[in-house]
Image (cartoon, rainbow, N blue to C red; front, side):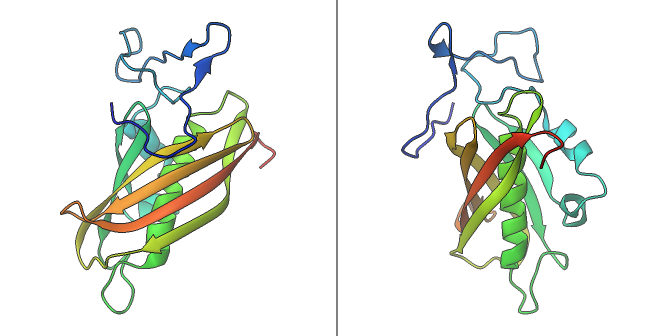
Length: 177
């Protein structure tokens, strides 16, 4: 399991037993899930990709590729849909990609009847990318009852950091967003 690197991250705990939550994964709902999962709702890349049909996510070619115990990963092409006029990956496309990954991950951490909505995002674009696929990975910095903070790293095909983003989410009642 890849550990969270940010200060302030706390693994969700079972309140009555004071032990890390053991959540089955979507791939093996009845099997031993191994390390505790941050996510309360079992999901899969296929499920998340299905939810993305007919949205900006699909229009930009964003694809969810992996759900780990404490991260969500996806890819986005660098092509005519996501490049700015000077041939580089558009910063706005990177921010949309980051918010997609962080919000999707955050929504897997809330109880039934709640949803996450973005309230702040920032991004530092540190390397230009002209073509290929970029890969984004969202990891929790803080998962609380009212807010969440996610770090999203976007890397080029050589594993070099292209953009780092931080997303703050509000946890609200479903239907009240």
